[in-house]
Image (cartoon, rainbow, N blue to C red):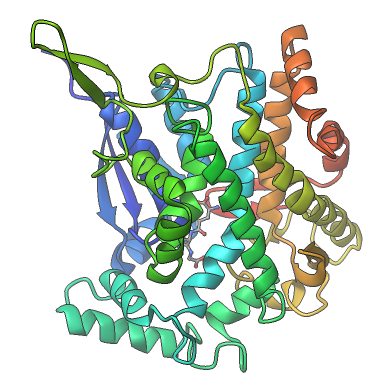
Length: 443
Ligand SMILES: N[C@@H](CCC(=O)N[C@@H](CS)C(=O)NCC(=O)O)C(=O)O
């Protein structure tokens, strides 16, 4: 008899961006017997009674490990489980596949913290009464499921509607921005910039459509961190939300199919990992072969498929200037003496953090200019980006340890405009570092 795999508890919502990323990752590990997990709906009672006391943050997803350790943050959850259950791997090794490893982390960052803007915008914009097409009813249903889990269907929808019109600020949206809409403005997504964000998202989907026309996953025939990262925007928002979901299915059918494949659930047509395709042998028996592209494996010898380069180009063209400016702005703020040394920093992705609104909105010290589609706009600085950059700098250093690694990384970055600026990351992070304790960030 084999021992049962260790059982984790994931606290998540079906319609949450970062929950989709982590759930698909855990499902992949579980499919190969590395671990088992229970997916628990993170109701307000559980968030306030369990999650906040454990990690000091109310965000989902959060993971409770079998030994009682709480892990908050989708990236930390993946790193934690990857260390504890390395097989099957989702992050290529720094020694044998340094370019693929670096590409995974760049794509994760793009998906987590840049694609989030349009995904967040489409959900709420198409839920405003005055906007067509409209998915307000669906949005009520998906939020009501969390906020009134014990109520009947109409009760669940009514509860969500009350929250939308109250604290979420949907009724007044951009006229009197509060809640969600204040968050969108803080991210630089306004009625003026919306079409530029949409165009950026469309262009990225077009590039992905080309890639998934050749390879079933980012790195070939098995998923990796890059796939799970991309599933953040692509599952809960761009696939499930009806208005964006209609556009995705009709205009980007291969991306849509990849969502099902990476999510690993009800994906018979999409052909997923662990699945086989069968032919009939000469003697009439079923003959199995891997169902996914590239022989059902990552591309060998650290190969980066050429169709992936345009995705990385988007990272360096659009997101990288904003990240560099984040470091400059945060450093200036920390050096201004207005921040207690070691003091807490804002920690949220979607909105200004409670208590930091003055700094993170308007012309506050933690806001900066950025560009999208040729438009200049203003957005908040998100110190969490610095934490992600520190993680990326660690990965880059590991990848550059060997001669092979230096050659592979150089060959990758030299093909991407501005790619070689990444070598300056360590220098740019000097004097501008953050610490993450549970769900809180400190200077
Ligand atoms: N960096 C975190 C972000 C988590 C996050 O922002 N979760 C969203 C749902 S997808 C949330 O809980 N938002 C509620 C809030 O910010 O109050 C991660 O990667 O897990």
